Image (cartoon, rainbow, N blue to C red; front, side, top):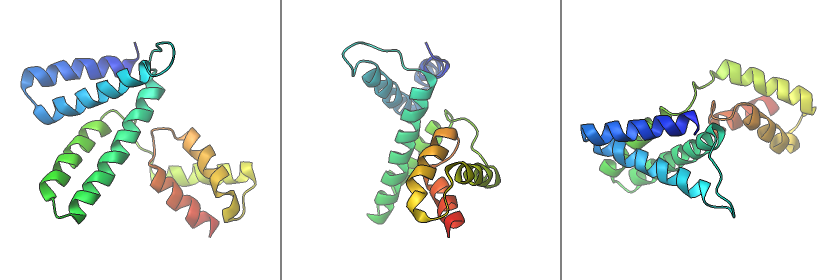
Length: 150
């Protein structure tokens, strides 16, 4: 069993004992995503930490988008609920890279790929996101790539 899966299972039980409903609901959702991933193919597979990180990142992105849409729809209480879940999910990500470190990685990748204009943006983004998996938000990477290509 992966370290993250063990941690999630242990913290789910703690949240259940402490009656922390938001944390409990969020961890149940995450555990369900992991279980769905493990049984989605023809044979059952064990989710690795990298798989769990991908799921956590996807759920965080969904929560951000939902909070934004709730705010546009004047549903502040729902936006706050989504942001609460987002904070809980962020605990499972590795430490995030600073903009300086991210810029350095993007520059190195641009040199490796030989990119000089926006036509190579997809190549750069794919390569950088593979290097910083879970350590940086895709929008932050995109903003730096666009800035450096301009």
